[in-house]
Image 1: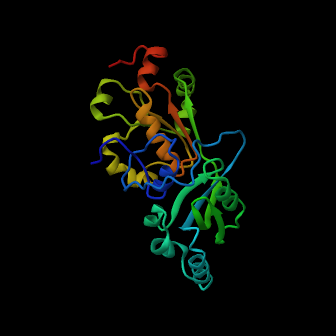
Image 2 (image 1 turned 45 degrees about the vertical axis):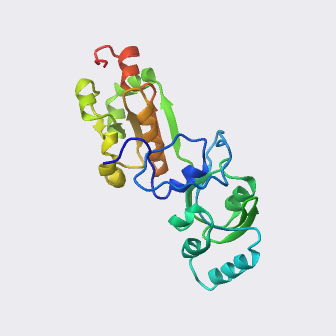
Image 3 (image 1 turned 60 degrees about the horizontal axis):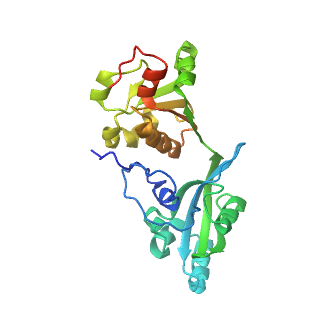
Length: 257
């Protein structure tokens, strides 16, 4: 059983550490401490953006000869991930150099430019203040959406039977809390039992469906919502203020505790 303090996936563990401004997650894997590459805060903007699944290898600036040798080995068919485990000085080497899904505004400019102009599955080289990188974009997708929804707005949707058929509603509170107050149609995924349901989440929920997450005051649900986003859930909504705000501002028949 995991303690409810941090939440993360293997692929996203390093990238979370690369983004020190983000809220810490819960983890069922070890967290890495590489703090380089990240900007102080992610950029925001409108419109559909791309996210890239990036793998990289980092060597010191003075190790240019080693870099050339590694590039030759890759050209001969060796795998970047295997070479990252052996040679990279970035803690992401423990995941074969995998940084997880990244979007524009999160990485230092030189690394970002190289990643977002690189052809898919082609190893490219770039230099940053941290040294020389060999990076490869393994996949790309549209940026996932994470939004807060206010209790009043959620209440309007909640009254529509069609809405309930088309979305996924999850409550991450503990069973004793759910016994005190609950909303119908919510499936309970207790945060303290994350170790049980977390690794199998994509077999229990559909990442393509709109997913609404609720807890008592909106903080635990925000952590889980961010984690779901890292797992590829396309549209995730956090109920602002949780069930307490819903009860006090929208539906007084729901008990408070």
